[in-house]
Amino acid sequence: MSAKFHPRPHEFLLHLTRTRSVAISSG
Image (cartoon, rainbow, N blue to C red; front, side, top):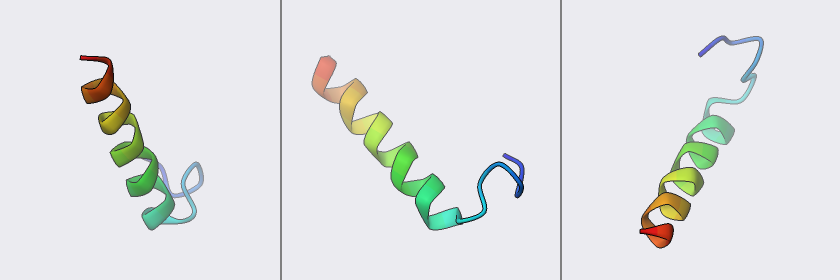
């Protein structure tokens, strides 16, 4: 969780949510 790696916090959150959605969809 480095600021350099994720300049935009909202983008990081979006990626996290998307990953969670995929995981849930995969079951």
